[in-house]
Structure formats: C-alpha cells, structure tokens
Image 1 (cartoon, rainbow, N blue to C red):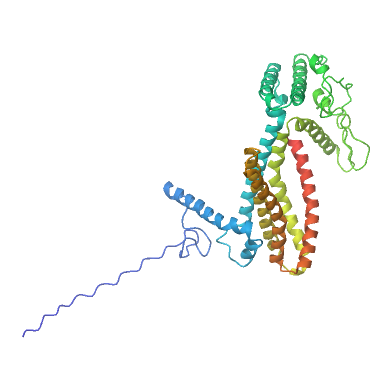
Image 2: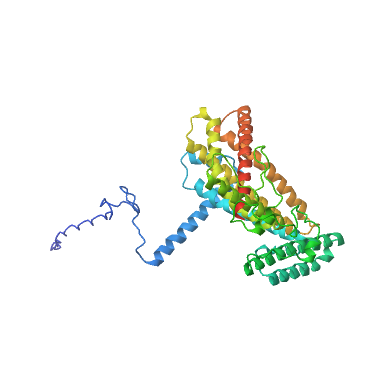
Length: 428
C-alpha cells in the first residue's frame, strides 16, 4: 500500500497587533470612552450631526429612567436616598442638586399658575381684572373699561345684585384713576408748565377706593415737597399719605423725605428712597391686580429657597455637631428634604387645580380633600422619620432636635418670605 502523501503548509507570518488608540490630549493609551489620565472623552463634537443627536436623546432617556427610580423613594421612603448616597450607590439615582433644581422650578411654576387662575376666577365675579395702569391712551382705557363692564354683565346672573354693583363700582374706580393719570401725562407732554387737569367728574364724585388709597382727585402736594426731582408728580400722588415706620422711629413718608440711614452715604440713601417709592407704588398695583404680584413672588421663590438651603445645612451641622459628619453630608440631606417639600407642593397644587375643575357636588370633591389632608399630615411625619433614620438617634433626641431645627428654620423661612415680598414689590 502506498502511504498517503503528507503535505506540509508553510508557516504563516504572525499578524502584527494593532496599535492601541491614544488620547489626543496626553497621548496615553485609551482603555475606554474616557482617558484614565486626563479625563478627556474619546468622542468630541467634531463628528456627524446624527451621532450628536443620538447621544443627546440617549442622555435624556437615561435621565428619565433614573427619575422614575428616584421619585418613588423620594416621596415614600424617608431618608432612603440620602443613605444610599452616603453608601456610594449613586449612579442609579438623579443627583441631589439636579433633582432639587427641576422639582423646585416645576413646583413654583405650578403654584403660580394655580394662584393666577384662582385670582382671575374670583376677580369681579369672572370679569376682566386687568388694570389699565400701563395704558397711556385715554381711548384705550375707555375701551378696556367697556370690555370689563361687558364681561361683568355676562356674569351678573351668577352673582348677587349687591356683588354686581360692588364689582361695577370697583371697575369704574380703577379705570377712572387710570384715565386721570393718562390725562395728566398728556397735559405734561403738551405743556410741562401747565397745571394738572381736573379729575374726571365720575372719579371726583366717587367715594375713596376700598384699598384705603386716596382718590385721584386729591389735591396735589406743594411744589418742592419731594427732595428727589426725578420722581414725577403722578408718582407722588400714589405715595401721598403712606408712611413707613422702621425700628420704632418716627414715621417716614418716602414721598416727602429722603431716607437718612446714618451708615449709608448719600447715594445709598437715595437708592433706598427710590426703592421705597417703587414698592409703595407697586403696593397699590398689587391690591388692584393680585395675580400679577403673586406670579412675581412665586417666580422669586425658588431662588429664595435655594439661598436658604446652605443655611439649613448649617443648622443640621450645629445640631448634630458630635456626629462628626461632613458639611456636604448635611447639605445632601437638605437637598433631599427640600426636594421632597417641593414635590409635595407640586402635588398639592395639582390637587387644588383638579378640585377647582370639578363641580361642587361631585363625588371626587371629598375624596380629593381627604387626599390633600393626608398629604399635609405626611409632610412633617416624613421629615421626622428621615431625620431619625439618617442620624440614628433615639426618639427623644430626634424629636427634640426636630423641633429645634423646625423652629429656627421657620424663622429663616419667614425672613426669606419677607425679603421675597419686598423684592417682588420692587420689581413688579
């Protein structure tokens, strides 16, 4: 038998290993999507637009998935997110700062919207509550007056006769004042040396406004009574008779006297005077159009609460000083606590809007009212349980510290609200 012929294959040359990709910035080998040496990402923005859009959508969907995993424990599991963060399990949840930022903005936007809707619905029995303060044309003011009275007439069947007459009188007073101011402005433009025109007969015979402010037909103050020449005559009319008392001192009338704060220079006192006059003028507008004022106040609420956050963390640091926790740990607790509060405010605003949209005799009215009461009870209980689980003290010390922190923070909240209202009046 012939043996099978054996063929020998020539040995193949070894394939050269591909050179590893290197970071364009520091030239170190790339082992992933980011350089381990300098942190620069492998991908940049100089590539096809489709790839950038795909990464953007992926980021959005990733945030959404983490949001669902974050909101449930945030609301139903007191202290859970803070403990998870301290233990290092962070990637599955939304970061505390981002969580607080988005929930707080949504919450106060919702509250502003609900408050604005409620104010518009209750103004003049459904009639237009727009004040023609910014309108300078007398014809436009009269047009707005007619539209407001027509809207009030449509709502007359749903309100008592006394309420209709009261609303009609209030509308006429408000537009009469706007008309008088517009006529004065037109006269000053035509002849700056001319005296202000006489008030409209309807405004002259009208009783003083319900807001306690003097009527537009009041006699103007003597020339030169206002030190600041930049304030116009109509502005002084708005300020006439209003005085401010500071720290038990003599009442200060900003329409006649400049501020005289000893530790401020002349420019500082003039600035305080201008702001006081602006706030007093806007106080009238806030009474006539409260929806606009509330919208301004709620637009500043997130910033006010954000500035109070580090102060709340300082309170936690002082009360739990012997726990030897870092300040950043207390700040994480503060962010999660305030995120829960903002989420609760958002839910309360939603419940209020839903109740207002239902009929008075609806079955869901008492159900939503009960849910609202339970939510209000859950807020303080949640904060107490979170404090107990995070700082791991007995019930006596936890309750004592809880009341201490709550009292101190209530004072800070009141101070922040006062500053918020002042800024809202100044910027209205």
